[in-house]
Length: 139
Image (cartoon, rainbow, N blue to C red; front, side, top):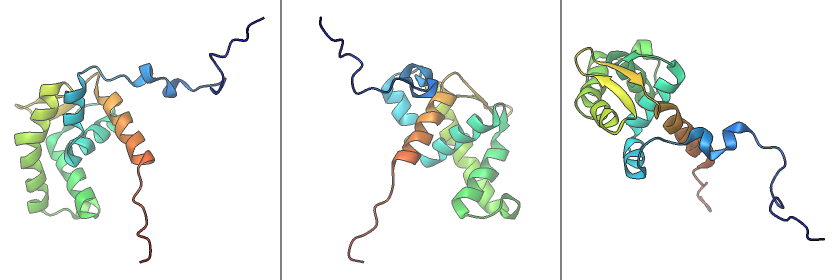
């Protein structure tokens, strides 16, 4: 009697989050890679994923400036916030909107998640977990 080997080497119990279909990104690969290619765009996606709703570009600018400067958001200076805000509203949010990663309302300067936001954020989280910076040997 032949033995079914199709499941050999695979765990019998898998979590739903490990199913590739559970975090499929509804866009072409080039657009997805472009969406996560920049650290500010990655931070926008992660923030939207955590908020589960609409965020103003101003709030995103404060959050991202705080991360980039490694300080509390309440201590962000106007010039730090403004620098991030301008790059978000003139470049990054429009890039994310054009590929469908977020919905950016240029008039109200607000950002809303789309069907792709959570999937992209999950890939970012997985990469952050899987990647590491090797210690320099002999230092």
